[in-house]
Image (cartoon, rainbow over all chains, first blue to last red; front, side):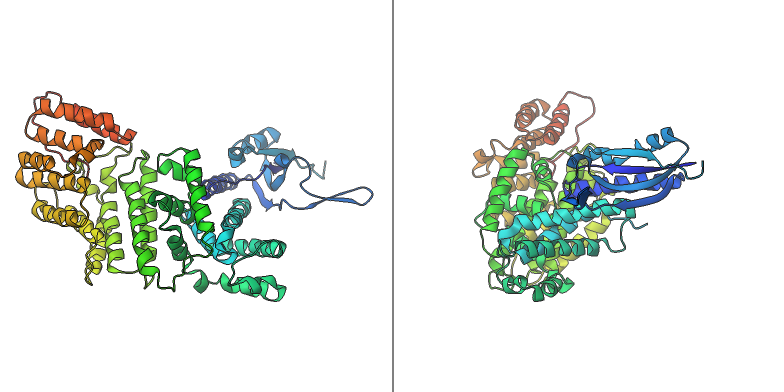
Length: 112
Length: 428
């Protein structure tokens, strides 16, 4: 098995309370399924949208960083056979309900 | 893993907005809505990865409190907040403890009730009061309120914008400790009655939405019963009426959201727990000297609920109660319901005569169930040819797909067939 990180990118998830609750329930069902099938290494963490960007020459700016559309809202660590399987798992992510996307990146193994 | 109960966000939304509006002041209603919305966005981001916390309601309230602290700090020079808290919120020494105290369970207990009374500004049209309650206290988005009323989103946005402006301009929230309660209570009861009716009789075709409107009306009526100043016999009667009708909802609407007339309802689908609770509340309402319209309507609903079918329904008592209701609320629609009950008691000819004798009967000229009732009674007299034009006219006046489908089915029943027609009243 290989490890992957899912980076969740979206521009927020505002909606009516009922819509938000439904979205959350979809997420919980999706995470539960990942766990039951042995793919969930670590559910990960949500990230604050506010933050700072630090560049060379002491240049510090407030986030958001690039386009708000691509803001990373959180991450999850996944175990999968290969990149194709990991991508297939991400295809079921409820983030698409709000027009977001999942970036699937293999984590480089230490021992080659 | 903890689960979230159905509609938790929606319910908590009403609580959060009500409490935050009290702290920020009613003129900052929009800010209160923003902070509540932020709390839900945050809950969604965190819970979806980390799971639902032990006490989701408390988590949301704490999140809203932290966000409110930020707002109060950032904007205390630019804005004024609730006048009675103003000075305490200005100073960093008192800000956090004041907010803590204002968000404690005893302080927030009456917030929803206070907001409910505030939404029922007598200056606002009744439909606007109901829309405002649905939006602010029941957490329905503008689109969801519009869908419930079969109105366009743009029209509902305009209506809610005006209503919110009136509310925000009222300077303070309704004072539950003042002497205004008895006067405003009637307006509130009426708004909840209309909210329930919107669900029960309303135009929205989606049965899930209609059930939710009825559930919300019951939840808010329960809030009236929980406070000594609003738990009056009339409030009990109103709640009884809602339970007794809600008990029949599973049989009244089929899965497709189509109406079933009373005589076509499978009474085994009636919710006996709701019927029993309705009867219990009706018993509790029978005190004092006030006999409200809600008492009478609940009484009629209880008689239907107690019968096992059309034949053993106490139509004499129902006609009597309709007569009583007519004395208090002379209305051609009530008179029509009375005529239908009378037809059950004395036969279809008596019903048709009673309909013809309704004062202001021309006010029913655009009411589809006026023509449907005439059609039903003609069917009962075995005169389908006379019934057909009545149903055709009713169909032309149908106000929603739900009514249209119902009336189409009734029109089909006038087609010649070998088996005798079953008598059928309008879908009361």
